[in-house]
Image 1 (cartoon, rainbow, N blue to C red):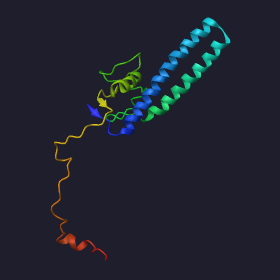
Image 2 (image 1 turned 60 degrees about the horizontal axis):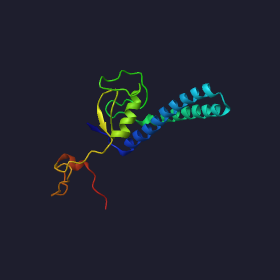
Image 3 (image 1 turned 30 degrees about the vertical axis):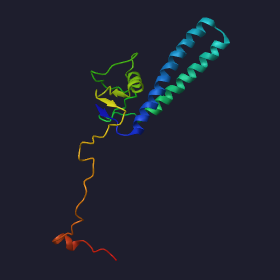
Length: 160
């Protein structure tokens, strides 16, 4: 599993997921309002229909704008936008949408699988491995060595 390298990118995935889920829910509510308007045929249901359609459009446009920064770190494909590319064989849909599956996965599990390259990513930061000596700085025992030879004559002396 790969890890998202910055917390800003992880937060962008979370924001885009929340807005995308609200946009999907508002579309479902708008369809329900259409059915309600056709059945009741009242002025109140017409106002409800107008408000629900405007909110669905606004949230869909906002989801499109916010999802621009959500890219897979491996293949650099925009995972929260609908691209006309071939999806990976491991990619799964939720209610007919790859993006909705990624959004629900980000909010529920804190990880997602890119629908284009098929790699799994975690939004949680990778825990540092303290057993590796590369993380702990090694003490420097000697000062900087003076240069000798031909290169030493080409370097200008330090001004006093």
